[in-house]
Image (cartoon, rainbow, N blue to C red; front, side, top):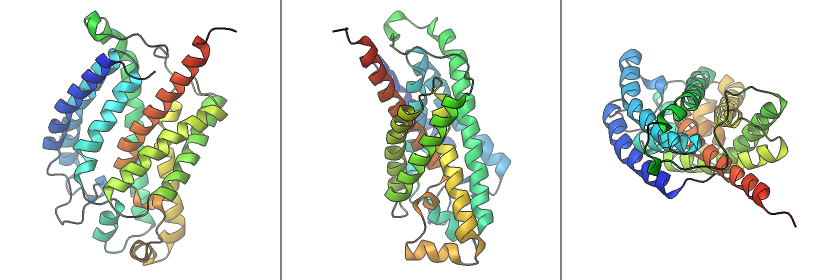
Length: 293
């Protein structure tokens, strides 16, 4: 279901509080060479930088838990994705172009590192979702009734993957990757994030139509699966020839899936999936709530 007016107010407050906290904690993590493009592969001090990232994300996660408890857990994840998009990814000037330019000789290893980073973001998304599923009913019991909204689609139990979930995950990932490939045409972070947002808003509608999944976690993992698939494709094609990646970057032939950073998939992809699933849930509710003729 789409968020109620009360939830929209809570989401706005969560963004107003979470974005400054995240931006402050991670202000020194971005590249200082002016090329832009934020990725963990650029970290000079991984343990130190990871600590600041966790510190910055923690308020956003806690605020997302309150939003999720007030109604549909998907709104909590959407709020978290929006906080990451504006507070972190949106502050950088380029997509993967900066990462490639900072590497003296970008190769398949570069995209393998990005794949590992995206897998970490995907596991984090799954962990946050499961945590929200556990925490939301407990937080809701302590919230005033005026802050709680009843939704037609209640929170589901701990997910169990079946054939329907795998089918929806596969279709959503393939459609999202294909749309990202087509939509991303330059190196700006704004286009990368906007394209991923649009792609993974549309993709869940097709994935759920072909293979309806009962548990949203299957679809929530689709951006990570699509991104890893795209990275491996670039690594196995352009990445195996020395100088091919930089050549493709400068002549414009680098595929769109190779221009998007893991953070863009994690943040904008999460927002898009939540919107798509929300529209899907609204469609199902409208069909089931329609009176018989």
